[in-house]
Length: 237
Image (tube, rainbow, N blue to C red; front, side, top):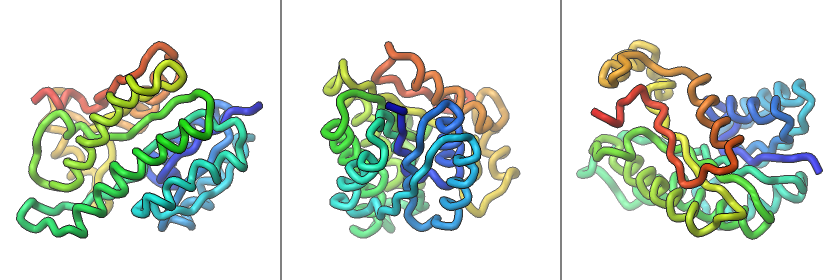
């Protein structure tokens, strides 16, 4: 049975690159998207050119009940589903004093609750496999900008560790924690270079750096509970 992977937010940015990387490695792709239908169709076209199969799955991950249905939908198309990549996230710059119940719920729902219930569903639907969560270099420190985002990613960081212990030996659970690799939407390379100056390496990383880290977690069957910081040392400062 051919292996398959479900990637949330798989149409754009890092999610797109992970989807293409897995397709080139022989995985069929269950590609989740929410608002990026045009980009999802374009990414699917690129995946099909690799020889892999790809199906698109629309889902609003802010609804936990909808999120819980995503894995069964993907497995109905791909019986060989064995990799779950929790990549989708929301990233809003809201300081503590401006946080509303709606802002907090939105960030926690997409960045933490959805990966939680997707992982639960993945374990229930499959016999063994790999879960990779995408975090952020900020989880090692306590920055107060993007308050809800940082809090939700910290929750996912600890969930990664707890699930690695809970789900072994049949499932491995790891994470990638990018630093200055891609500028946030609407900001360019100058912003990225400025941010990277705060890291010991003094330069931005690349998508290839992220892919290399992901592939290590994919291919090393004795690694679980690991959170790889691909940040040029930023989390050390």
